[in-house]
Image (cartoon, rainbow, N blue to C red; front, side, top):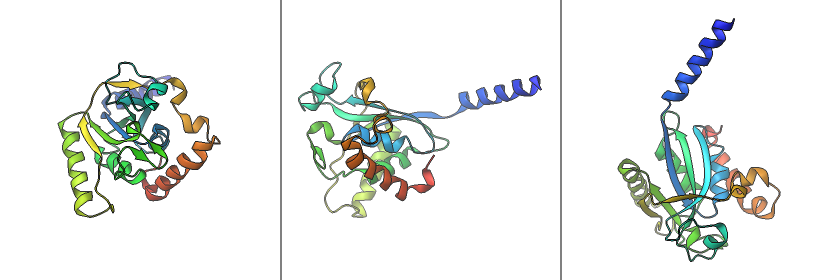
Amino acid sequence: MYGLQENLESISITFMSESNLQKATVGGGCFWCLEAVYQQVRGVVHVESGYAGGQTLNPNYDAVCTGQTGHAEVVRIEFDADVLTYRKILEIFFAIHDPTTLNRQGNDIGSQYRSVIYAHDQEQRMIAQNIIEQLTQENIFDQPIVTELADLPTYYRAEDYHQNYFNNHPDQGYCAFVVSPKVSKFRKQFSELLN
């Protein structure tokens, strides 16, 4: 029995080390919303809330909320590309936020809430450009897409209390009235991708 357990552990370690882990970084309003959705996607290994795209070094939440740092609230998604494609991550992204409103999502107003895709490499940039062009040609949205597409800048992890926020505070007002409906919309529209 011990030999079998040892073989199973070896297989498990081999599988983990050979998985095709990649990262994606996107912003589309409050990072609590995006984090809560992507945590439910099959193939996503880890989601982290953070800040990117600004000029202030080591920003904190209070500073970013002023809109003066230039940073956007973003999520960094670590995913297994053998299970989930980068394109599918972006399809979810465009379905769960409004990419046509400049520097706002609903009542969240300011450049920190802008719609943005930060490409980690040239392939991600090409996929993002392709999907934006396709959505535009198909007239999926009533207004033009204003999503910013840029190379990945310096990324800063948000404070600990922002991590896993929706799961830790599901009854908090913003979570109940803003985050929860986005999660429900995702679960309905992408049921085949649920964990």
